[in-house]
Image (cartoon, rainbow, N blue to C red; front, side):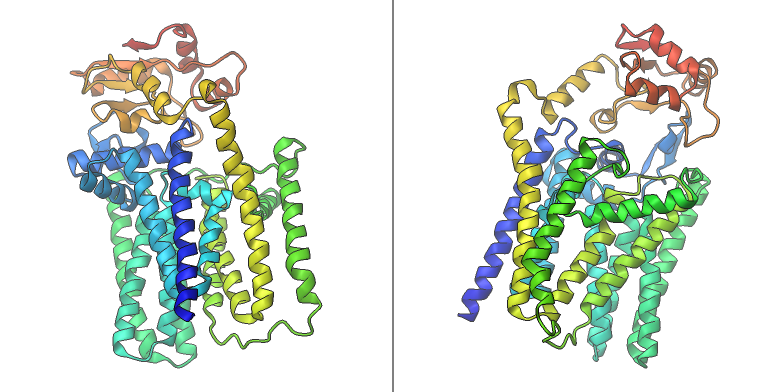
Length: 522
């Protein structure tokens, strides 16, 4: 019976994995952008560069400054390298390689859940079907391997605290070193891992576990040395430790505190996901957000909290295993680091992918606490409530949109249909040419083109006039043909306003003057 129960739980985990893997591919293929945004396009471009040239150098780096090949320091090499390895191993385009990589990493995460949580592993795996999680694992972004890294780091630090043998110390120390390094090489914010390791060492010293602390200091020092070396290399190659100048934060004071509150509120809502904060504007998005948040609280109250409050004691089991503390503390440290970094400079919206790893760790810690602290029947009630919330999220915001797409498929554009249109726009541009402006997808679709653009706001305080910029291009590339992809937008549209904000008025005037053209050679 015991083996049958374990098999049943593992079977549920395998079904969830199969469903998540299928969902990743379906969502990516029917989404017009393939769940590939601006940053993801650069990741895929870098992965293709690694496949074709075995180097991390591109023309002009992130800003496409007219110049020779430069090291791409804006994003660390970890995620593009992983995509490139999958692409080279299986002969897949980098787009499909990135999706397969996500599925492989998701499988490793589920395997870790199975090893650590046994018969309850499926409830941890099930969280990845919530739409917020689905958005992350479907995108070609570094958050997926970063999540694996922080998960492995947290578990290894906990096991180091409980180890008593030299073999255990060395094994856990090796995992800590690799996971912390992986966290940094997939996202620069992964440097927070050094803070987590440092606090773990202090905790071990407080408990007088000197051998465990010593064996943890070694990977900490090695990680610090590797991180410092990478950042110094960035500084030498690009002039900046993170590869480009960072602009001061656009939100400060009480406004930033409200932004932080909104980010946490957004994470708490398991049923619905947002990419921008809708909390103080009455519109369709905010109504859906608050409605689903209210439904979530109702489910938790009637299915779980009401029963818990009716019991005299909920700590009926001794929670001697403090793994949940490691998850929650690591997640909170990540939150604090991201909130601090975002308060210093602009690099992304404080919601969704930016806060996801922290919420994942905290939620995993909460589930682990309830698992080790409640009676089986009470934890069973929580699992049913959580199962219902995630199921509602998956059905309303994944299954129903898929059915709606299938019903209107003749009027909808899939990823590959959109890619065909984008390739058609630049099909007549010969290899080794320079293209000023592009669609994000062009970056990884045509690696034989040098891409360029004038300085945009807010990354640079001074934008470039069109005339001097063109002369600068011609001087930098005297032997190359230079083309401009005309940006098309309707008068008064959001896209037009965004373009006018980012670039000098002379650039906008050039686009309007040639609005009927597709590509113009300078």
